[in-house]
Image 1 (spheres, one colour):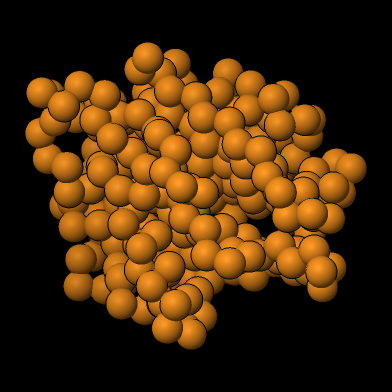
Image 2 (image 1 turned 135 degrees about the horizontal axis):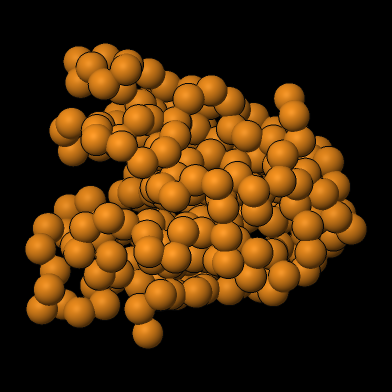
Length: 239
């Protein structure tokens, strides 16, 4: 699979929707993850990321303008033990609760499917990053739950596992191939992309290359592979 420029992937796509990128820093010292949201409607754009415990949640920037919270207000990031869960919806809670019950990432998501937002049937994209410094473990997995070419009667489920990630490389998955009506769902494996720079450089690269009109919020986290400690950056268009 071609190793792509993440900056180019973003700058050439006006509407990838919501996206998750996970990988390993160039110096192999950090697990790297990012999550962004975009929006075309005023309801989708009326959001910010705020920290909540070790994770984050979305909230309305202007509560008086909030229309339908069902698919836009959720916790994209939660942490349980040595696992960091990042998703584009309330399935973050599904995975978290599944881990509490001893289920795997894939098993936890068996109870969910794509979003009920006809005619788009937006895919649910999810990831989990596991960092165990004491055991020298760094691995991650990604999942997409999508309709079968827009058929709401058929849900396709794909899970991708990555162990001992290569320095300076990662995977990128997003909800839509590009803008459209209806919006075309992501296809294929998560894209193989370069991971470059410090946390601030990586954050700036992502935010700069997201479409100016459609971008809403960005979350980036670097987890130290030797200590498990992490740094987080949050960028909100609404301030």
